[in-house]
Length: 563
Image (cartoon, rainbow, N blue to C red; front, top):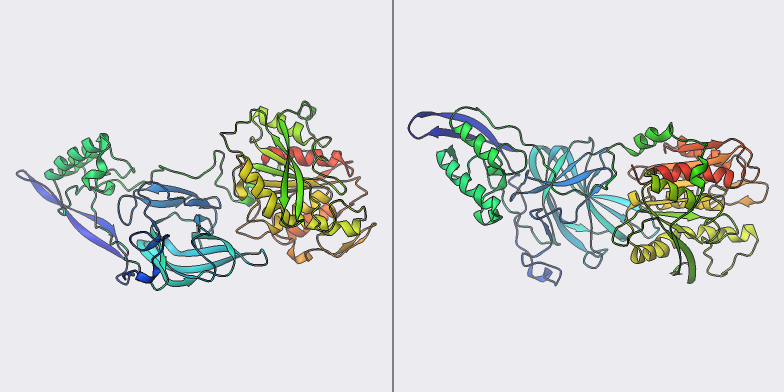
């Protein structure tokens, strides 16, 4: 719903009034407006009776961009001076998100949700969570159609499904248009949320009397002095009224434009332009989709690795011991800190998996990982990162591998639980690493390549960059010259669907690899058949060794963490 106001501007003695139109955002009359039930009170509820009340007046309130979206504070507020604007959306599911505090929001309990949204289509308030089978599930809490005006998305009695890792997010049913959110409120079930009413503000009507005239110049001049002195908040004036030129800021040019309007030298104000004040975008970003990103680097992939990048590994190796919940024992890993490492900075993290029979030291030397990372980081061709060399074998019954491949394989497959449940939390609590799938990569050789692909599919919400060098068979049921593989997934499941399409999915296979033969290409083809974009590197003369792994690692390390 959009309400139009007639605005009058005049000069007291000499100028005739000029009529202009201005729009104010409004919400439907059936907005929730009930009182909080006293029984819902707890230490987690604020004095207004809310678990959450995000207004974006002082920042983004811990909301983040979802997918490739950028979130920013803007002056397109529903209430107050600021809202959260969502832009650079490459897909409908790209939006804004915030993690629900597990200590406050409990599975099986019900809550009342409300958010004001403004856009150009059907906008949805949704929930992402992990169910008991470790599968990522998406549910919709409320939705509504906006035509540029603010509407209220509400659900007074929504029960959190059984699961964990709840993430609240706002998305659209279709399209990639920008949208804004404001007044995000969560209260107890049965509680009715007293949503603040928007104040009908008019740009240029500084004193709020419904008329744009010379008296507004006086008020705006005083407001500008307060703004420059840092005491603007005490004036009680909305930034939306004083920002006459609509650029998202308050400056002298706003006062000049207001004067020209009142003098009749200009007939209307410029359109409002969203101005970024806070953003969650990483230092290196792109607004392309994951498919577009892989397409943009596909022609740059090479099997001719410069010899200069395979010399003089630098950085520091630290051996760590962590407790594996799945193995019910301590396990080891090696952590590589890059040249110039600074503990006050944060770094993306790359997990490297070894082949069958190896351990956390197997990929540290001989596969070019540290050398490639060292030289590409120093030349500026790779993002500085922390690399974790893993020990995949995770068998509660055996600390050491038995040497019987058929019997040992389940211990490797168990790493799909050990990595996210034990190793990743340890690394995140002991090293300054960036979190989120956009900051997490995994790749490996042979059995480690197989497990990297498997983990990449099962943990696609946590890992965005996936690589496999000469990956071993066995993810899907098959038979090779060594054994019959029962498989851990069907062929139809070899895929990673939106919204978690990988930023990079890269597989390398050697033409002279007589160990895994054409299984690397089979994996690539299955991904392609199921709509998952990937890059396949065929290495001429490459065997089941570093000759295939080095080209994979060179290209992978060069392009990860840049999408």
